[in-house]
Image (cartoon, helix red, strand yellow):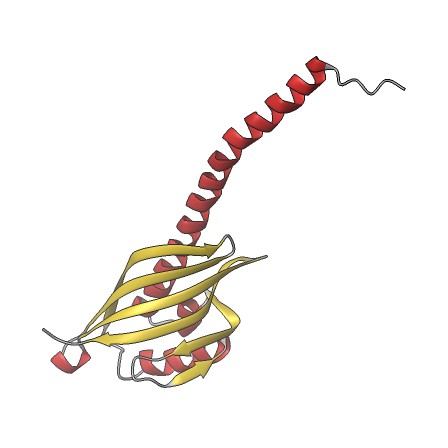
Length: 159
């Protein structure tokens, strides 16, 4: 049995490892960019749902069991409840409002978990319907894509 290592094989193996080390960050960056784009698309989906007054569309990016803290501190749970409660406010108090959201930061705490900070502005026909907010989303990458697992809505004081 010959235990001597063939220098050419050793060189080939080392070259493959070096190539992998150089290429894997490029793939990771491409995946990260695609993940961030999908996360931003979920935020756009919420805006579209709000501005078309569709509770179902607004709730589409949420996980089935999502946690949702409303701007007044109330808590609701689950995509279906989020959809129904938003449809009620779209049909009543917020029927003449519009929403703009801007993603301020996406921070991946793990490849499949992101914390997303979003500034929000609700506009309406009267001053009491105008509101600024800072929203924190915890998003998870699932088989069906990125979903909002938790949503915290915090009012920003007027200046």
